[in-house]
Length: 124
Image (cartoon, rainbow, N blue to C red):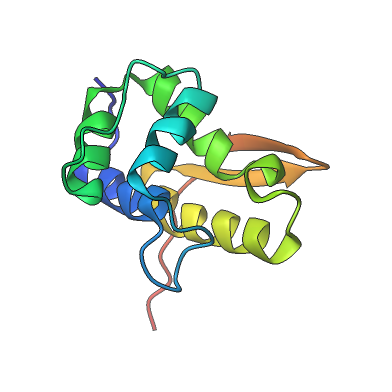
């Protein structure tokens, strides 16, 4: 199991499903299976249940390395066919969610990387 906090997993599930204009891509059930397959997690096939809860249950079963692979795929320009606006939105949303985990995603050329950071809050 991953050491990532449940609210962070919940935010990642939202992003993978892509509901609403807040996320770069909406994924149908079969596309969720395809997404996890592209990460090397083909053992997960969407069963027709509610997309968000199914996706969250998958994320809860992953170890840290598998979850890192999911995050890297979510930031990968190939996932968005090189659409710069979608890539930028993906990285922005990921970093909002991952900051409290002490993680930050960057794209170096077309290669996403995960960096460890010190979470900081600025109070006014």
